Image (spheres, rainbow, N blue to C red):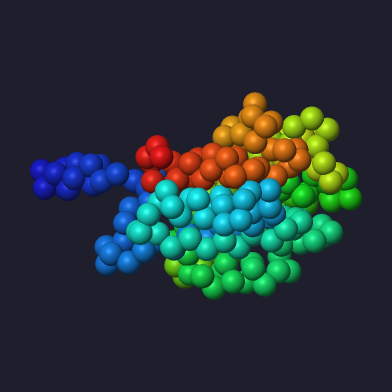
Length: 222
């Protein structure tokens, strides 16, 4: 009985993996592989050449990470949206990347009226996308992002009101699927100057996004 109690006590001292916990380096010393999935904001529209947030994120994370940018401009999370990410080669390449971690930031283009009329399908499609990564043999940690704000009246049909309707979905899925959340919204909230066209972050804005992602992935401020 005493031995059993000692064993139980020892187990209780082992920290459980939480969705918000930072990633630990690999035991074999090889780089952690990070797949950044998203639309034009991930791809780098609005930022200077070579300054997309995944590129700046790689600089913050250092040599222990390999970062793949799988963003495609104009793409939706919705399967039946006008330009679904699901149909892109980038999606297949992100899956084939064998990632240790995945950062997903989709939803901005889903706010367009022609897409948001399918709002009832948004949660289910997002759940399926997250699961497609969680079920990979590499068993990656997945982080979903609250997208960046849309100042004023927005642009290109993208708007803040529909974006706010999405927000409860991110919280719900994070809890249900036990995945992390990166608050890109908070990173740029109240800083419209970093979103010159009211949608795409400039180089400085992409840098703030990179800092938010790096903090979530490593637990450290950068």
